[in-house]
Image (cartoon, rainbow, N blue to C red):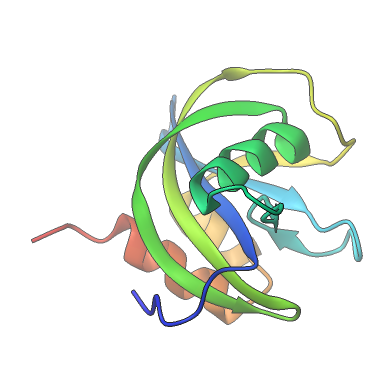
Length: 129
């Protein structure tokens, strides 16, 4: 984990058990709907990165989740995003209308637009020692 910079953004890699095994949540990017990304957004003033990550997953994807652990900090165009591994709890009304997709980890690796996102997903799912 880099952790050298205070994150400006936070988001989550949300996992859910499905008929095909563990599924990963992806959403369409607001700025370019052809891109698949993890739900994430700005850390508001006075807000912890953990709270921001849970809020962004809820607002963007309509998913309530719980944090398992912090995976890493990931550089993004407008700063640094703290990325958390999360477990799905339930669907909730989203604040935004984004297309969401639950897919297997190999499918997510194919669909994710950015190499940094693919790398952080691999770290999130790697066996812990």
